Length: 354
Image (cartoon, rainbow, N blue to C red; front, side, top):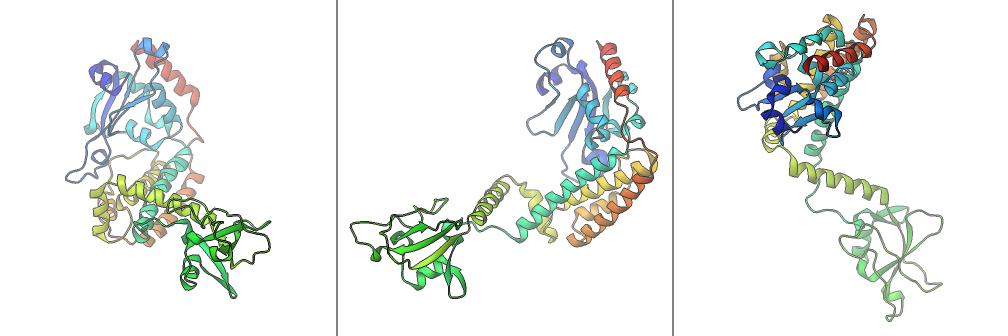
């Protein structure tokens, strides 16, 4: 069963809903229309090898969960699945009568604190990541190994490139020998110290080198300097450079420009969803229900518009988390949903449908 096949065999759809911003009442002009739903596999596919737990279109804005996957995520209090089960009536395009066997109240538990707060933390991490990328952009020209090398100088150290410049030397004319028992520390020599029929290799092989290289130096030759290659720092830089370039290539340009326009240097949409998730977690503890349609729309859209400073939002999150934690500690919600009850309902739905 693929997404395309499911659209052609709609008899196997158990639930079809508009989800995302339109279900939350947070949509703005130009907002996408997302869909989520539940389907049941044809009986032959259930018994065979081609068991699909979920299907989606190419852009992943239409996702459908097989009934067993849906119930499995439900008893784990997955926020997306709890939202799908509690979709507002005007956003439900189709609902099979067998779905009435699944009662929303049976699946709320203290796990919601971990799952909703966990999703909120993920949104914060994304917002922080963008904050860092905007405020500390990586230079277009990638640094080389040489930029992470330092020479002992007087009572401290100076960058290798500066030392080479001050001594009118070129890295291609130098050679290194490793120092025993000192990690990433090398003795540095120059070609002028060596007879010219024996060429040194240079400190690096070229601009794309990912490490220094060693040369063969005649015994008793005095080194010009002692050099350290900050290999760990270079590795971290390379990873961050790669991540930054991938983000730059794949980022949603409209959303990025929106972030720049409000001048707060964080992804305001991520922060909006952080507070949506935290508010929903609080409501579950207080009222034992999932409110998908947001009555706090104005506040959430203020966050999305960049009305708040990032540090202010972080302080609000910290206070909110402490409050929610206390609510769940006092809550009469079960520790987790009843697994056996969910399994029996799964069997009833399959038997009823087939």
